[in-house]
Length: 460
Image 1 (tube, helix red, strand yellow):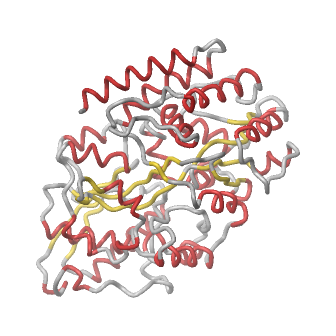
Image 2 (tube, one colour):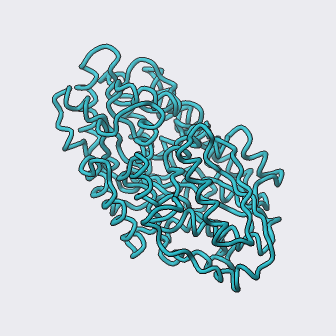
Image 3 (cartoon, one colour):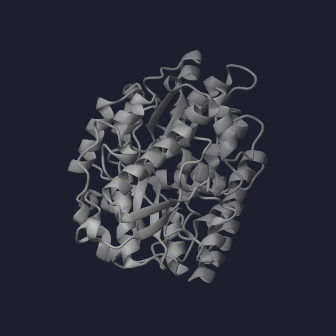
């Protein structure tokens, strides 16, 4: 999913959820005041905004929810017209950066947390600081999440969802292997032992899966070194900082699992879709991943929710946090920015409405209960979201309790600068230890660090 930004793209797009709200839901909270833009909406001049990331036609439920919400929103704000743009996947690695650099983004455009710095540097993200009070729940958004959109005190976007990485595991395979699915591994040593038992189930079974190509290897190296307390770049952001004991431990653990334990299968160079396919087929026991992985397995891999559990990242000292949201084209007028924020307030950032209309999701047979996309943390708005989710849950919440309890106090750490270029470089050591038994970890990290230093030097 990292890119292969494509990989990251799909993960976030499918996982962090394009759920929406229903104008007809009885649980819908009161509509926002039409005067939120500073005056009567009915008296305001007409304004049209193009908005990216409309759900694709291949996902008819989410598409209908979006369209219903647009209609309901426009009824509340008749001076605003939303021009929905379906560009699935919302973030296409093959075109996103070029489209951004060329100023071709929608007035309200979608992006990952990692895209913010790139957009600002390219002069393609509007400063929305004067207008953010339009978001009624803005004050409750977790500061560590808003940090992704805040540069030098200025705000350039708002989040749609966020995640912390954990351990996704197949409860059914745990049972078959004689493991207790209600007590998932908490340490890397426990993961190794569980992986060996799952691999011992027979040919085709893989205890633990890991990415190593298409930038996803570097992305997961980052996840793992963060978990061990390490870093990718130093505090200045100008030097590589992963040629360390923590970085070596990440690679040595994978090398041991691959060649000593034989618990990772013989085929490697996996990208995002490969692990989703294997997990969905019920042949792989564990991977690192966020809650949205389980949504992907159910929605697009025909897997059963009940077969999967989610635990906290093993031995985590920090966890890679990421997410997605919306920024604004610098060509947008103040009126378009205000209108866009009103839409995001309606669709993205209100518990009980839009993407968080759990009552509607439950009524239409969609899954409710995954511990994802709470950008408000423990604030009153965050607590309200959790109450609504629990009240409408259709999933066995106990399957995710290890993640909820174990991740709560783990600090969130954002992706490094120039992350896609760095991830591409770090694919090499990840793939090397998984495909060459005699791979020299010290040499691999030293060479990768030199390349990353060069990338950061050119960028500064």
